[in-house]
Image (cartoon, rainbow, N blue to C red; front, top):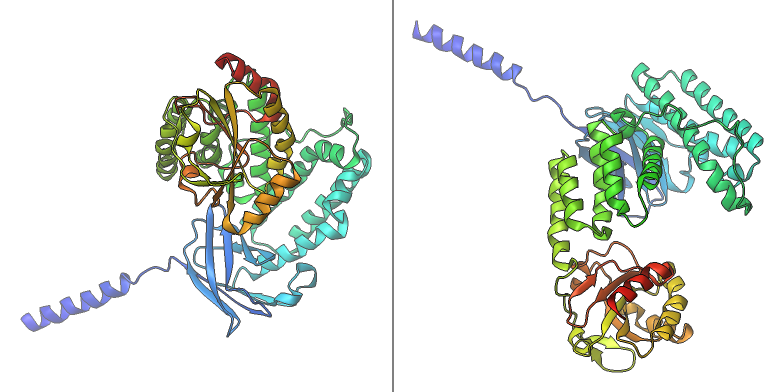
Length: 465
């Protein structure tokens, strides 16, 4: 009897083991690329990015992926890329020759059950040069010709999607994508046409279609699946925030508030808040209020943790805090200079953080020189700190000569991401201007640039400079 019971239990165990076989929760992305010399390829999607090692000996790559959602992805192979549709469990393979890998001359093939969709992407991409030629030509067209061309393009893409025997759910999403790309081009037409034509008085006619009419800010699926939709949402929210923002108010705060009131979908709202906060927390004039509002509006734990890290760094370089010290930067005039060498003279310090490769930095140089001339002999000293790496040392010195730069010229020998002093200000872009008082305390970690004339002069006047 015991033997029978034991055998029965073993049978149950075997059946149970079969039932508990792990469910596949991944896909394998692989490929063979002839004439490809790089060490890796990259797969990107909505808030997803992963580098995959490329074996140059075999000319292949393969990796197991757990993608965060089914949908649109991009495979980047150095300067060439391919749009892909990936499911969380559907293996996908691509085979092509890198030298002939442009979609217009694609000689490879896709494998996997999504091959039909991925081949459709190639045909779709060819329609842009075939009908629109290139962006410059498109947006240079007169209004009527532009609209005719855009209608041709939209109709061609729609016909292609319908005739490509695509899965029903994908086709539904793709038709939306085509429409958002169309609307985005319409929304860009006026600004781009002004730039390309040089006609700064150009305004579209009253009959021009309104791409924002009945626009839905709160579609999470569209936000995740459509690059054009995301760009339009950001552009429209940015415009709304500018309309709401009164002179002298903190635009970055207004933008957060605009996202909070205009966007209901959780995916879209959290992403828009985070994408803004990553950079704008560095520039806001109201750090604590900005941080508190972000934390109240966002429901994404990971986003909150990352923004909190930035906040905890930036609050140490906020207005009124002691300025972090830099030490022994090379001085163009000889020797080295530290922050302490510049303090104790009863002067404010207006610091320009710049680099020789930065075009915007160079545009500020003539205005900075003029500012230095106007305030010569007053209680302020102008300091320029180069955040070029050591390899650019000679270029730094030559730039000072070529542009006849004045003031205190210092060389850090490190890029801002590698320079501890710069990272305490979380510098996101150059040039960066910092104003420090005679006692070494921060007056403004985001001082106006010389090109912001009246705003900067107003601050100087209020300080009695």
